[in-house]
Image (cartoon, rainbow, N blue to C red):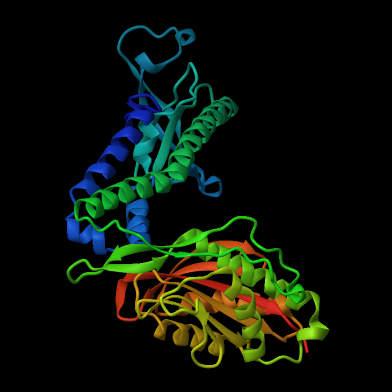
Length: 409
């Protein structure tokens, strides 16, 4: 077989490779059309660039390593000195070919990691396989085996160092993309004079009902309605500032935990009664929407924060009836939404004894919804944040917080 060894982890600089990658990403975003940057679903676009530019680690497939023995004509030039062979001759000798299958990009084996040693391994690379050749002299197979394990130990150490650098790069890649994309979008919005913010003030509450046992805010806050452009004429869409969104969800979560702590007080309540407890808690803390009533109800179970005819926050409250009912609740919630980047919450009251099983079912079933984009993070044991898209438009992304509370009957 053809065999020509390369010097591994030496010829290319890994740090320089990462720098070039980042500049390429920056250039790619800068060259996007303005309308595309302003209208694209941000989470999906960032995921796309991350998946496109992340670097896969290299891993040895330990269980698939194997060796083959062949007999070859070995030139006297390759014989050890103690053979005392003079002149140009060849001898038939057994040769062991050790094959180490790997997963990942074989090209990364040529990059020098930030930590390296005085000796660089040599081997032949082909089809995601590392092949190392050893000539068996004096039928000393044990010596070949020892040399192979020394080679493999060196290889493993280099791959470990390489992967450490790759994982560090990947962990910083998404924040880098978000920063570059955000700067580009911010620049375009300023250029089009669409950065004006619409705000709804929050008043400090000193009269929160004691029933709720939830502390009043210590400082005044503002609901910042940030504009996000639509496809037609770039009219700013009012959206809820993310910090205020988290404040709202935190209050809902505190109230939900209160339900759980005092089941005897709340277990006979219906959906509307429990919803009204949320409204009574939220309304005094957030003041100044265009409707004159910051949080209001429309229908039986929803909690709405409206602005200029659109819903910037929707909370939908339901009792858990299974995965089918859960997904139907999400459908109902999505039907309320008109604005890009709306913030929402699905609040499920669970009477089932096996609360853990319900949480798992919710986490699994939500992935099947046709509007699902991605899981974002988990804020509490039963509070999960997701990204969905509006019906009929994958670029109009919305945030959906799924919050489950155990109220056994």
